[in-house]
Structures are given as structure tokens and as C-alpha cells.
Length: 630
Image 1 (cartoon, rainbow, N blue to C red):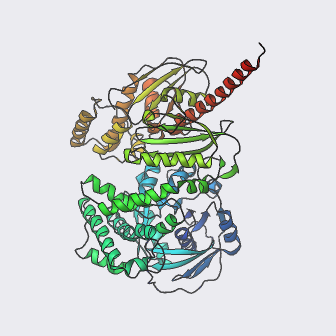
Image 2 (spheres, rainbow, N blue to C red):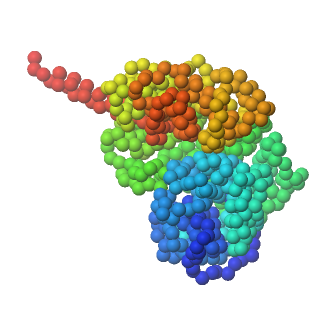
Image 3 (cartoon, rainbow, N blue to C red):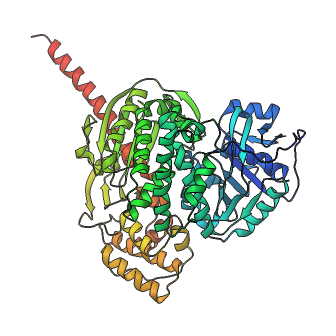
């Protein structure tokens, strides 16, 4: 985060206090970095009932004893009654609002636990930096339940419970992502303004402008400081680096203009004037890079590059910084996995707030190289899952996949490995290769034994797999002729219909529409969608119509009668209402396997273990044959 040295008015140190009022907002803050602690203090001072949550037990214990201290341009101290080390522990507190102040790369891991505690009235606020960061929460819980806070303050940790607030350039900006919960934003803003954390409510359209403006400032210095090991003041004192910074901003402004986000003519000059006031310290992304931790580069310079490609605009400097940070991160990935996984067996629900115990003995790796994502699963000798991750599948990221594999091998005692999936034949870093058909069957059979049908809707194909009573694959069918009804079909058609992909399942569930798309071809389906739009078909009905067309496509495939049906794959993981439509269409109950996106990589890991054990038995048998007398 860009942190100018200049501060606003200093505030007198307040006496420690616990504030609890009835009939007030109940707010759960997830993540106690500088942003989370600054917000927690002010929200509690404003009369909200606040619960704070962080998995750092040292920090939590210190806060219990001494409270949270803010020093620097804001000086306050506050004690809290509700302090937790996991999101699940907040169940009895029942927050009506969750403020997510984690790093963007940590957010995905907490979504399952947050989902367990939500209801129709729950509001989620992204208090994070970057472009499109609110889409992570909106994709999981819906745009109608998501707010975004554009933060114009920052701080550095002085102690686990103490933040030096380095600057606050008011106001902050708060917006409902689709303007449906502006009332919630107004109520919170009123409270924050009462305690001098000046915040303004803005519309969803202005949110784009403010979030791009803030991100351009962050992207101008963060990567440069991390790669060059420069403080912000040092970077702004060197003419050569100032020229680079100006060009980075210029590229971003051109891309923003293509997105219909326009800045004033002297915007670049104002940015440079603002940055010249920066303090003699590192921005947070640079601190993460220097300390071999994951960074938020994909939501800073990476997003500028992504939108530039959308409009065929060259963003050479932003691309260079993005790829250099990624390369440095991948190089030290072993260190980051050691920090996050620490050769541990994960216990709990995989939320990222987990108890850890050391793993001993051989481990087994399964890699599912899908068309959209590559999934990694590591199991121990008892077939317990001890590590899982997913990364986008891109040709230019093949080296990155090798880095991930190498890092996993360095951190776990991988005795044997298996590759499966769409790209298995082009990946040579595993001991064996198996088809996703057998990997899927093996994975599902570890959860449910016996005759069954497995329905796998992936990024580029749909598979139905029939297993007999012995869990063996009897036969299978797939629509490998085109991508109709697959994940890529969903994404492209939803984009043409202007339906947020994260909101699609929720929208379709509200519709009683019974019409489906006539064409399975993605090109013709897009044309048909355009006709629906011109006819004024509501967005809820359009969403359901798309799902109905997929269900009809699946129904034309061969499904074994009288046996249970299990669904796996990335599509059902993000489109749960599709299950309801399929059950109605197929007139058959369907079960979704836990973590459906990782079932195939889990099956591959199980196959790796079985192959390893069979090799051992074969060696023993050969040794017995050799040692038998004459």
C-alpha cells in the first residue's frame, strides 16, 4: 500500500475501554493486520459490537491482555470482549456484517467457513486493496450482499497488537457493489464519521473510479520497491525510477480509459506530486516479496495487464513488473509452502484457520491438469489429505507449475506421484500418468463404494462414468466434440448475457422460467441470448434458461438407471443451483462430493499410493523367488 509520510491531525490517546451496546450492528472482522486493527478500534469506538478474528495466537493473546494500540497520526487504544482464532468460533456471536481485511490471496481459503455463518441478511465488506478484489466475495455470496471499502489510511506493525498509523488522507469510500445495500453503507459511514474516520458513501459506478485510482497509486511503486529493495522515498528521489513510475501510471490510465474510467488531464502529475510525499519505508507488497511471502501483484499491476489485453493495449512495464514479481515469488515458493503448510497434516475444514500437526512417513502427490485450473493434492500413507491447492492453467505458467511441484517435493516426502487430466501428457514431472476417468472413479470411490454414476462437468467437457459394485469403471461417455454445456460455455454465455458468474446460481434459483436455449453451440447460443435480451427477458430467467440448456445436454448422455449419481468438477462447485435443475430433469437425486474440484487430483494421489505399494509387493515377490533353493 502506498503510504505518504504526511499525516492528518493527531488524536489524543483514549483510555482503554470495552464498549457494548444493545441493538447495534454486530460486526466480525476477519484478519488483524494494520487495516483490520484500525477498523476494529474505530468500529467499536463508534458503538458497534465487534468480534475480531485472527489465527495468530501470539497476537490474539496479547490483544486479550493489552488491547489494540494505534500510534502515529491516530492514537487510540481499545479492548475487545469477543476475540477468536477461527471464523467458526464466531457462530454464537452471529455477526450481521463481516469485514474481510485479509490479503487477497488468503480470501479464498476462508469462504467455506464464512458460508457456514451467513444468512440472507448477512453483509460482506471487502476492506482490501486492488482492482476487482470485491469480486472474490461477490462470486461466493452474491453482489447484492457485498460492499467494498476503498481505504485511504495505512499503518505498519510495531508489535503484534500495535499499529503505527502512517497516514490517513480522508475520505475513505464505501459502496454497495450493486447499490442494493446502500443503506448498510450509509449506517456504517455515519458511525465511522462520528469517530473521525471520515468515510463517504459512493455509488457502484464511482466505486470503479476510486478503486482504480487507488490501485494505480499502489501499482506505481509497490513492485518497483520490492524488486529494487527501495523504500518509497528512495524510489521517488531517483530521476530514472521516476521516469519508470510515470510510464507505469501512464499505461494504467490508458487502460482505465478503455474501461470508460476517465481521470482529469493532470492526473499523472498529481500522482507524482502525491508520491513525492511518501515516507521512508516499504509498501506492503514489497515487504511480502522481500520476506518470501505471496503477494497481491495479480490484483495490482496484474489486473492492469489483464484489462490491457482485453482492449489490445500494450502494458509493457506493468507486464514486466508483474512477471518479475511472479518469478521471484515462484522461486521462493518452497519457503512460502513451508510457512503455510510447514510439513503438516491439516485438521479442520480447510479454511486457512487450522490446527497443524507434523507429518511423518511417505506422502503421495496427485496433479489434475485441467483446462481451466491445475489442482494439487498430497495425501499421507493413510490416505488423509494433507495439502491441496489450485492454480490457473495457462501455457505461459508451465514453469510456475513445475515450481509448485518442486516446492511440494521439497516440503513433503513424496514417495510417488501421478498426473491426470487434460494436460497430463505434456507434463513430465510425475512418476505415472492416468486418465481422469480412472482418477475420478478412484477419488469418488474413497468416499462412496459400490455401483454409481459419476457426473463430471469440467471446463471443456462433460463426462459420465459408470462404476460397478467393485468400484471398477464399467464404461464412460463424454461430449468431446464441443464445449457445449461445460464451464467455458457457462462463462462465455453468461458474459454475453451480462450475468455476473458469481451471482448466476442465486439469480436462477429465484426464477420459474421454463424455456431453455435451443442451440448447444456456444456461438449460436450467444446469438439466442442476445435475442432474449432484446425481448426483455429478466436476468433471473436468462440465468435459469442457461442452466436448463446444460441440464438438457447432460440428460442426453447415458446415465445408468437405479444407481446413485455423484457430481464432481469445478462447475458444480460454483453453480450449486445446477444440481437442483439436474435432479428435476433427471428425476434422480444427486450428491455433490466434498471439495468437488479436487476429487480427481485426490484420486490421482490415491492411484500413486497404490502403484507405489504394488511396486513394493512386486519387489518382495521377486526377492523371494531369487532366494528360493534350486
